[in-house]
Image (cartoon, rainbow, N blue to C red; front, side, top):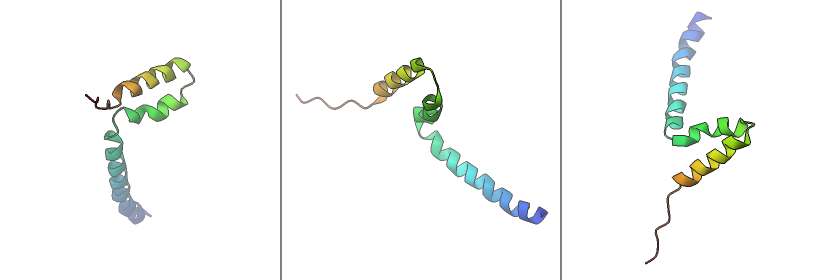
Length: 62
């Protein structure tokens, strides 16, 4: 069974590396699952403030 593990191990490392690279580019949203699972309302309020402050503003019509 050692040969099977030696075959699967590099593929598993590649899989983990590719998927972790996608998560790094998500910015603050990497914390979303942690915030969603938190039971404290204060954390949810702070999260909503943070998300609202990071939204791109619409260009004003002049």
